[in-house]
Length: 272
Image (cartoon, rainbow, N blue to C red; front, side, top):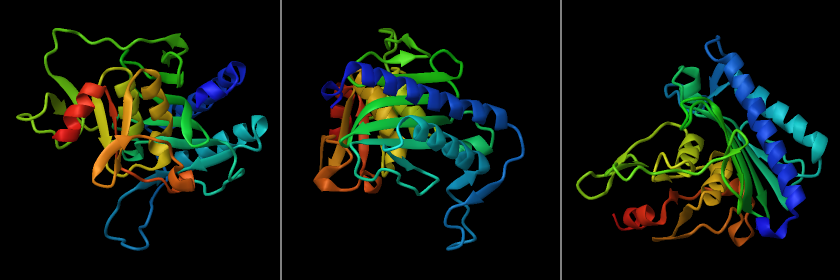
């Protein structure tokens, strides 16, 4: 889809996405280690089961992102995890925002989380920007890309590298069986981090059972820009990912098993 858009517009959109991800990262850094207000989604239904936490930082960052987008693209739609407001429902451009992906990690001080910004055009990812709390460089930074262009890290072109001396790689798949698969399973608690790590070549693949659009929209753009493949569950089989608006559905309702990574690794995953 990116090839249907003007190069200048895509560059502008990428710049804005990076700005928004950086904003999220700045707020996360400022709040880390401080006392946070935390509540849990669905706690009214089952007070004994504390799951799906939300901090006051999540809502504040999303509100700031929405206000910034309203300045530049007031007619674009926005799907966010924390705020249920759709300013441009039905628009060709949809921003999918997760202010803190990995909130449970964040509130516990476990240093793996991200601020994720993805842009869809007619249901397909075209731009992604993920501020990540750590990276291939052992520093926080922003992975970003336009689909069809180079993956970048902090504005510099970045090409994933694989050491030929490493005989066994890592995959974001928690049920990996060492006896049958060629990688060891890892899970970080952040879908966005794992997407970024696949794009950066730190993971060979990642699999998510039922992600929401804001969990993966930005990350899928990075993976596709780095030459990776994305597949989704279609009934009893796996098929190529075809966007978030299959059968004319609202992208906010998308919720399918999805896997991403090197084609060779995904081929092995599919038959495992």
